[in-house]
Length: 242
Image (cartoon, rainbow, N blue to C red; front, side):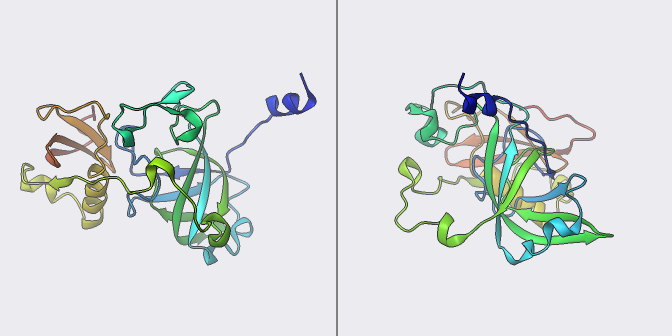
């Protein structure tokens, strides 16, 4: 084994932070950061990286890159995948996609920096556009630099256009359940479900799904180009299943 391969094999990563997220289950998480622009999150640095000096100057940036651990390992590594964007029917090489089924459990997300909270010298970073599971470990955080990170003439391959969004209908939900939501939570739920979290091969208008967002289990069905929310319950009293 070459020295370079030995060095790589011994690589150890230690999280610098964890994320607080409204997404409590892999099912329903946006497939890319920024697709649910109002999805909130809080980066909670781990000691000793929670000291204010480690974050001095970060508030001048609008966006941050997060390098994170796919700690729940939803998929085993594969060499080819069927991207949901292509309807789950066409194969692409793993490295031509952003599938989580990778040989190393690393993820990359671009989020908007909202504000920096500094309490008694300890920092918490408020962000939006999140696509991470609650509790995800963060290995590193880097500021987004527009003139290098957004090169002119770049081509996004088969993902040149934003995904199609379904309409979201609340008419089947009891009014007393909706009153538990604040307006921001309602917008995040709508933005999340509009992306259609179902597997690409699911197309049964009678099938019900459960998606845990914030403290709610949001149950829905899909018919045509509309998502119908059918129930909204507090997860403390009713576990989610989807």
